[in-house]
Image 1 (cartoon, rainbow, N blue to C red):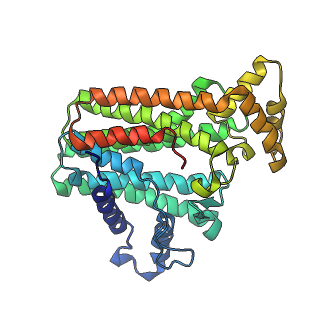
Image 2: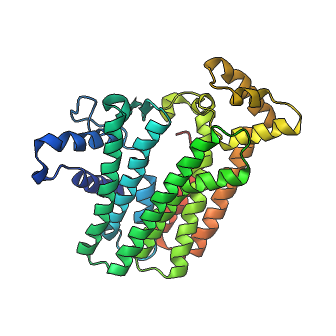
Image 3: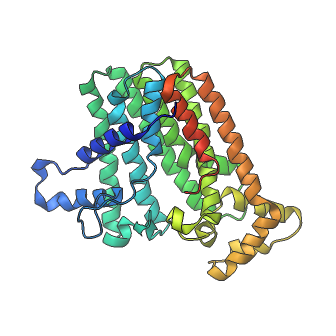
Length: 345
C-alpha cells in the first residue's frame, strides 16, 4: 500500500500557520514581522496579500512524523517537533539566501531581496526562536520531560551543525583544494544533521529504544548526504523552470560541490588546470559556464555524483531496516528515500 502524505502535511500546515500567527499581545506594529515569515513560507505574496505559492517538499517534518508512527507512536503527538524542524530549516534558508546572495527561491524573490538584509536576518532569527517555543508545546501532549529534553537537544545540536556546515561551505569558496573528507564534513552539517535530528525526534517521541533511535538517526544522516549530493547535481544540471534556481548557479558562485571537486581532482591528476583557473579567479561569468561544463562532462562528474548518492541511499535503507520500524509509515520512509535519487527538483 502506498502511503498518502496528505493527512500529515495538512496537519503540519495547520500547525505551522498557528505558530506563525502574530500573538494578540504583540499588536499591529510587529505583525509585518510575522507576515514576512508567512511570505517566506509561501502563504503571502510580495504585497503581503494571501497567496498559494509552492510550500516546498517539507521532507524533514514529514519524516519526523513518519518515524514516530513507524516506531509505534501517535504521529499527531509529534506535530510540535515536526513544526520545529520545519521552522529550523526555513530559518536557515532565509539566512542562506543572504549569505549566498540568492535573489530568488521557489520562483519568488527572497526575503532579503524584498525587505533588505537587516530585516531578513531578524526574520530568520524570529523563526528560529519560534522553533524552540514549538518544542515546549510537547509537554501539553503528555510527553515526559526527559523525552522533550532529548528532542530539544537534538534540534540544538542540529542548529549548531547547520551553522558549522554553512561556515565550511562558504570557506570552501576561497580554497583551491577541498578534500572529499572535508566535503562530507560540510554536508554532514549543512544537510544531514537536521534530517537526522528530525528522525531521531520522531523515534524518541514514540518511546523507541536507544538502538532504534540511533538507527533512525543514522538513516536520516545517510539520507541527508544523498539528498545534498542530488542537490549538487541539480545546482549544475537542473532545469531552472523546475528547480526555481538559476541555471548552473553553483558554477557561477564557484561552489565546491561534489561534481566540481571530482572534476577538479580529475584535472589535477592529468596535469591540467582549465577548470581550476576559472575557479581561482575573482568571478565567473555566463561565458565561463560552457568550458566548466565541458570539463565536468569529460571527467564523468555527474555519473560519479549519481553513484555516490545511490550508495548513501543504500546505506540509509540498511539503517531503516535495522530500526525495527513497521507498517505503512515505515514503507513511506523507504519510498521517500528512494524518491530522492534521480529527482529533478
